[in-house]
Length: 225
Image (cartoon, rainbow, N blue to C red; front, side, top):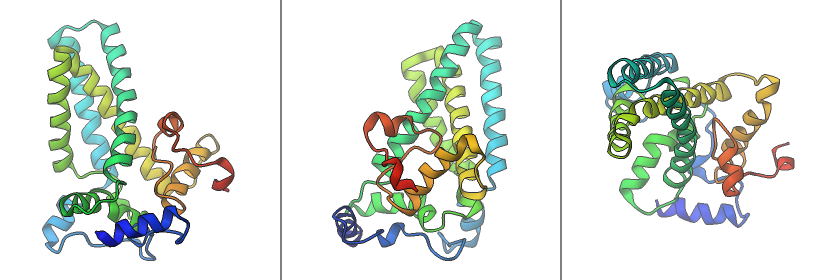
């Protein structure tokens, strides 16, 4: 942990090209847990499983908002859109301030590595590009509870938009690591590749560059070439 912090300062001072704990490895897949059951079923997941799961959940919540809660269609559309936008903000904040804040805390370091560090080491591992269903359901339930405390009945379409934002995020993330970009998304692909292979302390946005632009963490365009 202390070595990671030392490497961070060495990196930002230009003494090394990439911290070792964030440098991509030559192999495609790495092992996170020694227990084979935990490794296979609780730390890995095909991206389509998560996509289908959250599309069904989001669709049900939208239906519930209209048919059971009785919200007006324009309320649902507005809150849904706000949820999608809020996801992009949450995505940026978690990525920047939780996953990439170098720390001497053993607990935080373990959380960072399990949730994100291993992805930096094995960025093309197809089964570690989305959060597995069980931890995802727990975290999503916490967000829904927080939204409910603030928005009450309006929390349901907001949560649905939030989860669709997550689906877009994991879809872009999977594509950015597994496929060549089509022309309209080329800048977004380059943005994320720069974060992984050049500077892990810039370009935190995955599904959008918006918040990097707002908060000044966008790398200079010429450096992406």
